[in-house]
Length: 55
Image 1 (cartoon, rainbow, N blue to C red):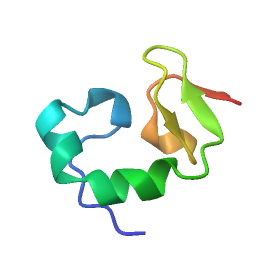
Image 2 (image 1 turned 180 degrees about the horizontal axis):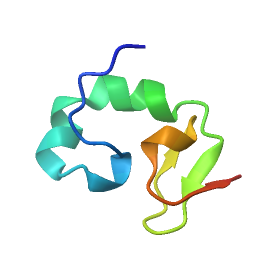
Image 3 (image 1 turned 90 degrees about the horizontal axis):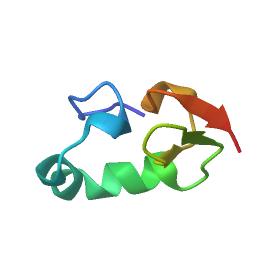
């Protein structure tokens, strides 16, 4: 999937970015396999989180 998100991780997204990229975020989080131990956001891939842990 080609990403149009500018942030290196979901952890750094602000409210405006979240609203603007909702469909892409839904795709990234749909089959979450990892959770950030810092902010509790989840993702299907480690690359989207700053401190990922397998769930």
